[in-house]
Image (cartoon, rainbow, N blue to C red; front, side):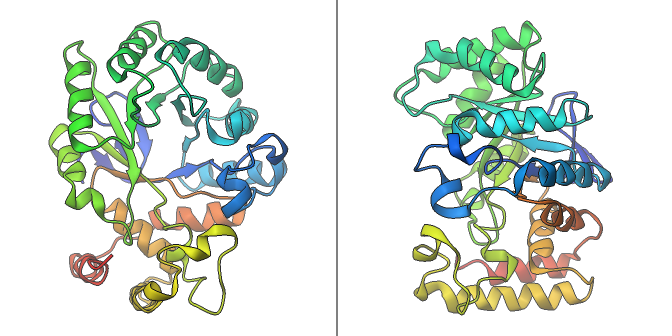
Length: 321
């Protein structure tokens, strides 16, 4: 694995060292202030309160996971506020994102960054990302704002999220011209969503030494093995792939293989699925955790390694997805 030591790796070409597994904080925070259409409300449900999340953070750090990802948009700032309350005395790497609204302008950058710093109770953000490309704002202008913030010490590394290969290369070029590396591109990636392997993003990440931060690495919980037909996920998840009836047989086949491989290591399907991503190289999965039990369970992906044959078995089994 490129630029890695045991359970750690460099954040691309930056001087920042991160854990090979992260902690996604999208569902964290006071649900009463989150928008009605936030996934916390209609799909996943909220995390289990500040005390339990404090235990989750402590347990994650104790087990080698110290990268936490949030965003200004998550819960209308609720996630950032909760993360800030929990990490102010912790040695963690924190990532957040611009913008804070669905109707952003390039000129919102200064305000949004100031609010994120306030929410997180920090003088600088380790990794600040453009959450998505949009026709509503100019990506080059926002990158230039980020460069200025980088030189001012308000952010330590610059990343993007949901950028295509072409968009990522363009961002990389703009930053490189100013002598700054593009640290990361955060996209959906899992055994059940392997688009980054087909659309050029993963290859470009390897070529440019950009970390692929993999969100939804357990495909909305499908790779936990919990939802196999009799038990349905809550919210709108049950109506979409891979939970819908047409995909259920294929999902169950993959879960069986994950269980078979896991039996050799006393690991769960979720831990095997996360380990598969880690061993892709330059990939940093950020599974969510609503409580300490889930955080400890996710961290178990750092305690073993899959063989080349097991990796290939999983590659072939999940290729249809």
